[in-house]
Image: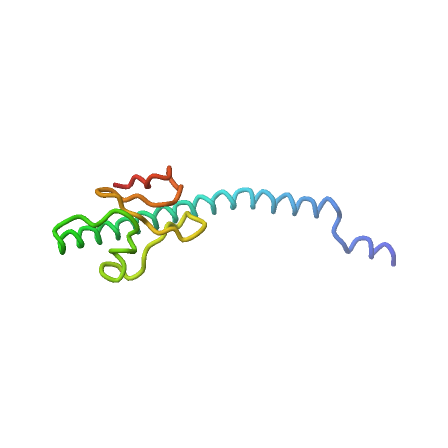
Amino acid sequence: MGRYALESGFTLLELMVVFVIIAVLLSIAIPVFNACKGNAQRKSCFANQRTLEGAAQAYEADNGSPPPSGDTTVWAVDAYVRIAPSCPAASTHTPYTMTVPELVDGCTYGGGTGHGHY
């Protein structure tokens, strides 16, 4: 009876093989996930900057002058965009700022002086 009890479980070697396989799969999956997250943040930032660029063009068309420098929430929100876009890479929701004629945001993603899309 003792003989069957010993054969019914997993050996230490089998468990170690399973853990190694899981570790290899995780070592492949984590960098891929991080790369996808970085790409999503860059694309979100690009979309935010395009939104603000369109808002700046609409502001200039309406007022005959470029929008004021500084926080875009002052002139863009409510008049040209519904919600102030914020940097997706920042730990806090950093609002975008505009320095005429180019967009610059407050996050450090991509060098800290804008993301260089324009």
